[in-house]
Length: 126
Image (cartoon, rainbow, N blue to C red; front, side, top):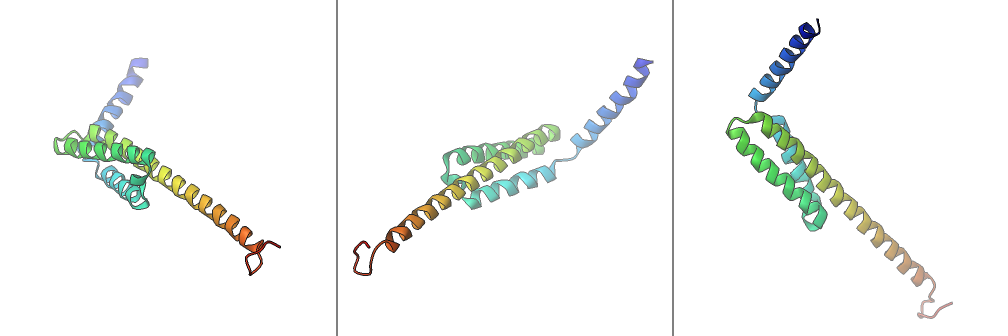
């Protein structure tokens, strides 16, 4: 009885894998490329950690494109998943760095304004 249940499930899993592997993962490719573009636009190349993830994403995308050309769609899909994740991490890292820089600049400007408010127009302290 247990064998009878396992066969249909195994067949369904095999059929699902065969169907998904027969079509190129174009949606995943487009998503990875869009995330890479977004990371570059926000300046991920300027932040070392973000640049590393951006390079990984770009390399994985190029390798996946080669696998797609060779008909290795399942392998390409796995690489594109990783590429999309690495590109998203590069984007998040670059955004975090930009936010930290903007916050630091705002604090410095606030301190400068406070110093200016403490002076008289002649430049003397009150």
